[in-house]
Length: 113
Length: 216
Image (cartoon, rainbow over all chains, first blue to last red; front, side):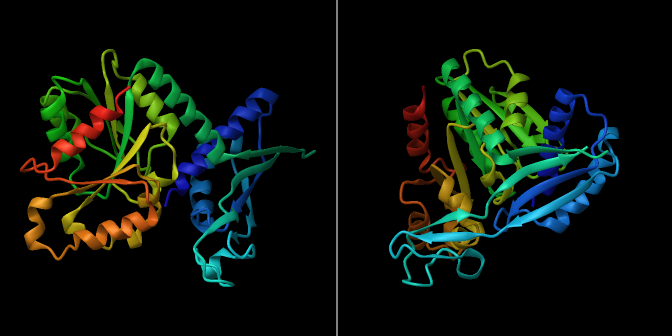
């Protein structure tokens, strides 16, 4: 839903770093994206293409997305399970006392300059 | 020669940090920031208008209107005696802490006790970004149906207050108030729920008392 917003965030962050280090062109940006981060990679790529076209610093800059699998932990039976498949209810014991261990990340891993 | 620079920077974390900073700054100034969220057409502006009319003589209120376009809402709010500023998100579906801070910087907040951020009408994205508000309030109007908590659980889980609005229209809709409250409390046991009608004024006192109680 808010891919354009996160693209602007990423670009702002990259601009900040390149300014500090006196870099004048960025070739690629690698993001780590949780599979339940609510950001859809294909939309993100579309927004990215449009947004980097407006920045001389990032003209034709590639966006590389590394997915992070979503895993939930059950506080009652202490088991871990696949969030995408089972959601909030533990498939091992049926408990709802569960929390997400990983999978909602949105991290700028690195930039290639 | 290409070189890789490691950043390992979490986007949500940097917004969370900005949000925390804004929250502290506003608290020091004695301004309570309330993030108001709902679907389009649920009556955010009508509810705010009534709240302002009832309270602004005793509690100075400012409103930051976030909209994709237009200035209709801000003009309407100013006519009631509160200060208002319209910020255009230029197509974005939510407000984040940086945008909220820049918006508030464009307003005169001296003497203001409550600043409402009228977020973009949308039940999904605004729930995922901390705006720096001290309290998150969401609106569900009767015509939207009692099953909304099942469809948009995140927003119901993170709100401090739920206002069920347009209760004057209840007789025309098949809205089960008990069941709706049960669904919401299942997602969020700590939430405070106020059924109100900004049209007739029913229930408005409980909401306004909650606002008074929350002032710094």
